Image 1 (cartoon, rainbow, N blue to C red):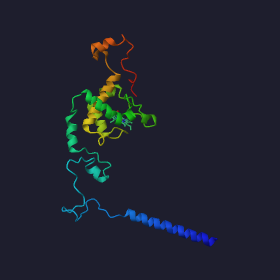
Image 2: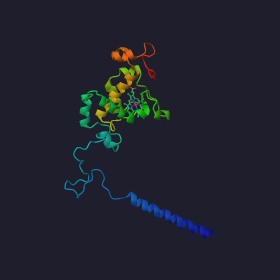
Image 3: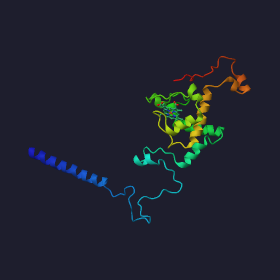
Image 4: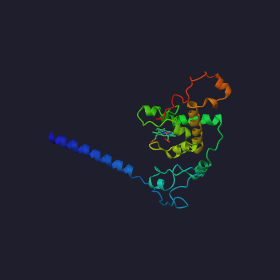
Length: 212
Ligand code: HEC
């Protein structure tokens, strides 16, 4: 009996060793390393140049030292758009586009109204500050753009997912959200103002007005 068990163990171990050999074979497939040469192409390089019009997701020193994971340098053509500031005039179409992008990328944490009570936060993610506080009402548009571009505290950057044009559309929509919770009666068109109940039924700062 003992002898049989030993034989069985030997057979099983042999099987495992065979498996391991097969796996090694998969790990060690022929491939080119970065910068390696190849006689296959006329320029002697194994790496092919990117197709015309390719946009790098990551570039520069940080990308080179981290397999691209930490490369946050903004490609030159985006930098130009960044420097120009908000490029498009604020129209209904731009706001609707900003709303769509906001609901995809920001709403999960910042909530549909921007008070920081989004579905991801309800499941335990740290709560972001509400947009409806004095500091963020007074912050320049550029601040929102920069937070999306570079991240802020524990919020990571969206530079690689949202183009500068779309970031400005989101900024415009966040401004509309802020206005929706905090508007001076005197800023409303007369017809709308008159249609509202006399006072003080409309609070000046809206329900989400408190700072965090
Ligand atoms: C995964 C959750 C999450 C998503 C998605 C997210 N944020 Fe945030 N955001 C946070 C958190 C958390 C903070 C607070 C960060 C801190 O203070 O450490 C924050 C802070 C901010 C702030 C406040 C910065 C300040 O001055 O205090 C702004 C503005 C902001 N986010 C805008 C956005 C925009 C615009 C988007 C969509 C493009 C977005 N966030 C997407 C979690 C998120």
